Length: 291
Image 1 (cartoon, rainbow, N blue to C red):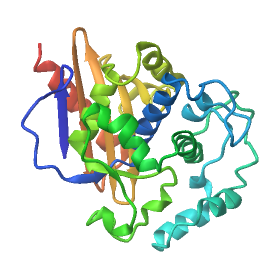
Image 2: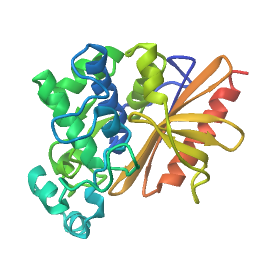
Image 3: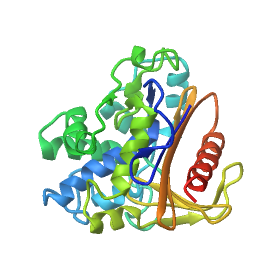
Image 4: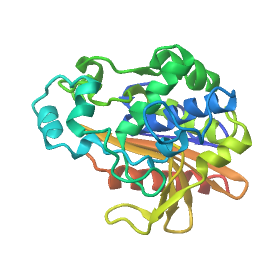
C-alpha cells in the first residue's frame, strides 16, 4: 500500500478507498507536533525540566533524556509473543527501572518509547484532555486529518495482528488511512500548524551516523519527533518509520528545488528497509513527475 501527495497537498493519484492501518512510530511525529503546539501557545517550554525527571521536553522529543526503553526487556518480547495483555504503565516502568537514567540528559542518545509515554502524559496533564481528544483537537483536526483514532483493544488491528494488545504501545497507537498520515506530514512540514521557528527546531537534527546496512540512508539523524537524513542521489527526507507485529510503515517528505512531495508506504510482513526503499522510490517518481 502506498500514497503520495505533491506540492503542498495535491494527491499524485486518486485516493484509494480508505483502509485504517496502524501508524506505529509515525505516531511520534503526531505526538511531537501536538507537544509543540503547547510550546507555540506558551503552555510549556522546550528547555525546562518536565515533571517526570531532570530532563526537558526537547530532550524527550529527541531521545536525549537518558531513558531506557522497554524493548530492552526480554520478558516484554515474550509477553507480546504470547499475546498477553499489556502490563500497566507503572509496572512496565518498575520492570525497566526507568527512574535510573542510563546517561546524563543531553549527553547521549537512545531511542526510547518511555520518553514518548512521558510526552503523552505531559500533553494530557497540560490540556486536561484524554490523549486521543488532545491529538485530534491540537494537531489532527487543524490539518483536516479526520479519520484517525487511537487503537484501544486487540480487535482494532483487524486482520493485521488480531491478538496484539495495542496498549503495549504505551504512548498510544494511532490507526488511520495511510493517505491521512501522508496528508498530516505534508501539511505539518508545509507550515500549516506551527510557526517557522518551531518547524526549524523540529527539524534540527542530532546526527546519528552514516549508512545503515539494509536501509537506504546515506546519513541519518533525529529531530523533534522526526527521523531525517539523506539517501543516495542527494535526496533529503524528513518523517518517520515505524513497525510492530506483522507490519511496517514509513511516511516521509522530500523537497527538490521548488517542488515537494510526501509519500507513505505500509507493508505487511516487511522490514524497515523494505518500506523505506518503497517510499524513496515513490518520492523520486513523484518529484520526477513535476519536472
